[in-house]
View 1 (tube, rainbow, N blue to C red):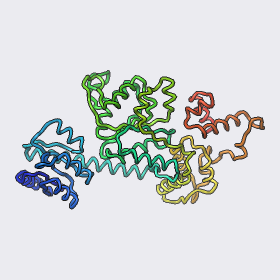
View 2 (cartoon, rainbow, N blue to C red):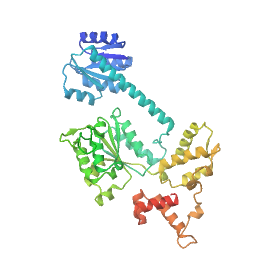
View 3 (cartoon, helix red, strand yellow):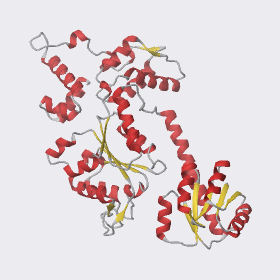
View 4 (cartoon, helix red, strand yellow):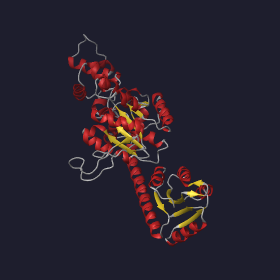
Length: 445
């Protein structure tokens, strides 16, 4: 590896150079923070060994500057003033490891081996992410649609702050993708992005998953578990479908939001976490507050900044999104498809898309498989889209010659198009959400 040694003592630099070159590494030296930054700019390095005290300069401050200038640079802090507090602060600011003086060549070798392992894991993750991008099309966040442009502009604006963000939108609108974009544009981009799926676990298990537990805290707790909050240290914690969080756990989340303090299940020790919290929901949380299912004070804490993703049916870029997805899936099958017929484009634009981007993706992938090419036609689309009723048959009015089933279908369809979410649609129709779910399935809406 190419290693930069930053220390104001020539003897330390010389000793490290000899040891590192003996191990087969290429070594550069710098006696000050400014020279270290110049060296990294002149010739990129893999690792920087940085002394905590550089004369009158701070190695911790240099650490942040090096990471900002070269995000892939692994920094190991070296100091004769070893303490847990300093180590924690160094790791919080982005150091990969910590080496107290005096140290032996064997200790230096061990640290560099750990660094090499972490670099290898990061490269493997990057390769896997690239493979995923090759297999799964990215959701288009950049858009010509004015509503989406406003959302993205606000997202970039609030990314630099550490305030809590609440992302609202129907299922399939890309709330998780927007949360990841918010993290990627923030100053925490180098830290972890950790997701907690609130509806997936019971109240007790969700608390353990979120805050961690100690061995013996409950049946099956055979070892300590750090929890997702600890895993997100220095990064972003994404609470997906926050509206489904059990009421018993909401006060503990509220306290964490207010104080950044929490306790693991079965442990009295209070811990502190440096985490930015982003939550998402498809529920009407104000109605949940009114019904007593969600705490009002928690909603205020979560909703410091609100981002609302519009449903696909209200966006003006369905054609562009469909073409993007078709191009992706067509590449996977040899590039034989060139686009959609005018009739297919018209049908895609007029369909209500209750499943939003997720449904559009599935529909286009299916069409790519079935289409003989070179254009996707109505017959290649799912029946609920390709055989959607014409404008004449859809303009049903009360008293016309139409069956009750036709009237019900059209009324539910129009309410779904107009309502902001499924809960609101169920309220307008005067039925339970579960009943609406069955009706949607029955009519293919």
